Length: 294
Image 1 (cartoon, rainbow, N blue to C red):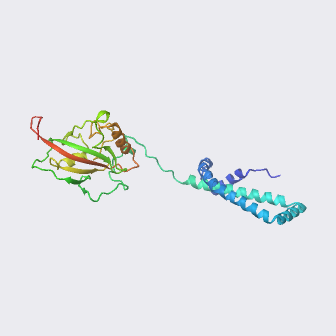
Image 2: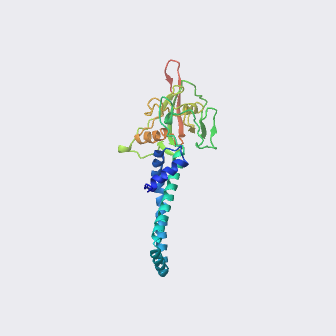
């Protein structure tokens, strides 16, 4: 007269007695991940068991026949087999539900959300050197946090000061993310592929280039070539100027700008940048708002 219960309801009741603090809906949501994995592992095992059973049956057919006759004469063999199968199925479901409960009890990883107001996600510039950022031992690290290596020293006695205009050529790479170029030199030229090869210009201290590059230009001389490593943060591109119209240097191609922004907007990758910069000319300020061509 005992009411019939499905193995699933029996397992749920057993689970609630073992894990009273785990919500049932959380368990079922976790099962959507756990069950497919267990089934993938169970199917090959079931096929191997079936193959082994068929092989054994061909070799011991007389034994199977004798067992079947005895079960039929006693009238209990089939019932015992059904009870054993039902017990095994309930045990398997109990294991699945217990695994789902354990998975549901684990804390879910928080997703980084980009919010310019709270400064989270891609806008988080508080930590310019995360733990996964690569180190470059052959570069000299400055007190400000940017690194450099001089490829070619410049010539002359001209010193760059705040307010001077620097004419420079440059290329840029996402050195922390596969070293992809977002501004490269020496590409195909002519026809539709020809680009404007005019040099870039900035007034030192005006904030028109990233602070790391502005600091690097201050100690260079005409003709000098320097590699500058700029970590993400206060020394790099600001997150609220993805067109790079206010703070440069701006990539000259759409593909270069897209490659740069892909890294800058992704808080899960190393957003360190490499600039190769060559000082072409230094125009000293004349004190009247203009410049004396160098």
